[in-house]
Length: 228
Image (cartoon, rainbow, N blue to C red; front, side, top):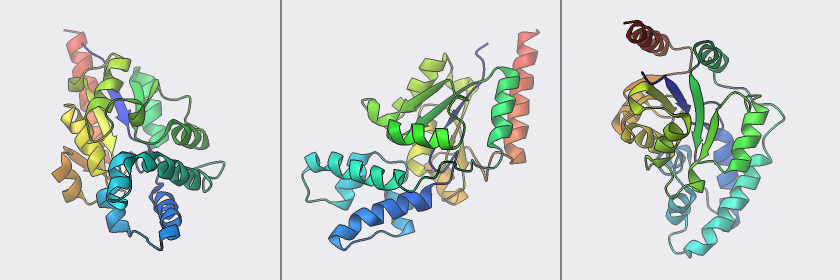
């Protein structure tokens, strides 16, 4: 029987960075005397790849300019990061649980590798995951399922024996369309919006009892199947 795998988004899931991201975008947009509000950020930025984000923000701009703008935005974001970030409640608990039961772990993110590495280091979690999948390094990023199917392939996992954790509509669509049971993390979006995107369950953080009931059930089911 395939072992359980746990697949985590980063921004907004393992750590709440939405305010920092929104500020970085607005610092960039201020050059054009423009700004976006939280609702726009949640609907059109969270979880989406750079080409989709900047084509919406600058519809008349040549696509060749998007990479430069994205790089500037990421630099503005990194400038706000301290030496240590605070992980989402229950993160240490679920990672320790994974260690205890030999569960393989991945981070699956659309963040650039430099950002992702910096955040994981600031969270003191860089050594806790078996693989880091960067959507922009693949032929398709979220909301396409490829980042999640890639993570499963690297871990030797199976969608039927995996859980994903996502806070954005694009991320939920990516994981759920890969056939993975997906928990929506309600750090930014409502339960209705997360379920509409494809989340099978919605939790506030990694202390939620609904998560632990399902994890315990899955571990017990695998134990029973192994010992038949």
